[in-house]
View 1 (cartoon, rainbow, N blue to C red):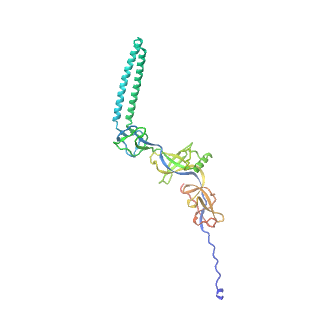
View 2 (cartoon, rainbow, N blue to C red):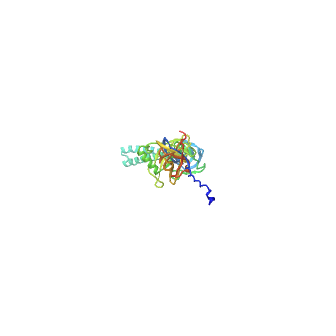
Amino acid sequence: MLASCDQAPATAVAPPQAPPVTVAQPFKDRVMEWDEFTGRFEAVATVEVRARVSGFLEAIHFRDGQKVEKDELLYVIDKRPFALALAQAESDVAQAEAQLELTRNDLERARSLVRRENIPVRELESRESQQRRAVAMLAGARAQVDRAKLDLDWCDVRAPIAGRISDSRIDVGNLITGGDVGASLLTTIVTMDPIHFVMEGSESDYLKFSRQVAEGIRTSARTEQPPVAGRLADEQEFLHAGKMDFVDNTLDLRSGTIRARAIFENPSWFLTPGVFGRLRLFGRETEVLLIPDDAIASDQARKIVMTVNGESRVEVRTVELGPVIRGLRVVRKGLAPEDRVIVAGIQRARPGEPVTAQPGAIEPQGK
């Protein structure tokens, strides 16, 4: 008992110190807002090159993948059968002209004989009918000449549009099937300048844009051509300027999306059909709040931001986010300019718990 009286009283345990975090007010700036979409570049026009006449391929006058101009010679089909057909048609014209001349002479003699009543009127009518038949036969023969000339011209297969040509699907010496049905595919040509960018927007995007147009906030892509900017997968900046030129008339019932299209000038032919890209659709200039992406957390489907209130306790704010501008994320809803956002040490913050707030600053990148 006496030994226990000599022990010193136990020391009280100090309460844990509130974890330190860095806080800053959102950066307020006036910026041009936009929405971003993923899509693919497509050719304005794509043409399948097919022959109009059948025959053996005699020559190819292009290199696979090269640029071609409109009406540039691509293929030559053996012309000899068509030259013979043209000569036969011209011979038929000569025969028809001789027959017409004969019927005209017979008709003149018949008219003279009728006036002298040497032959009946019925004979005159018969010779008039023969002349009309001869005129029709001459017209038909001349039409066959025109058709033969056309077939001969079609032996030279020319580029219907200017653009970049694909590889040849037929080699020299092969028989080509021409005509309107079942014609052999020779190659394809796509236009390169300008070029389309095709994308799909969600139903919520469509409703948002429609309401903004109704309120006069943005211009309609159906009546005007709002400016857009595009970038490729390996580009960090939106370097390509274009404009909207089409919005479809209905939403796809299966995907719930609506198709839209922009057009870009492409004089260097650098943008290629089939390449993926990102498109920035400009909206309006407005005042927004900006915070770093590091200050944003996810709570299931929500995006949240941690703030510190006047009692140095953590509060959770559900936010609606926009695009990244100058390295900072736009916050459309959920924050006020005076809020103190936790920009560092967010992993140490717990909702409702106290923290030690240390002042910081949010600085944008560039101008």
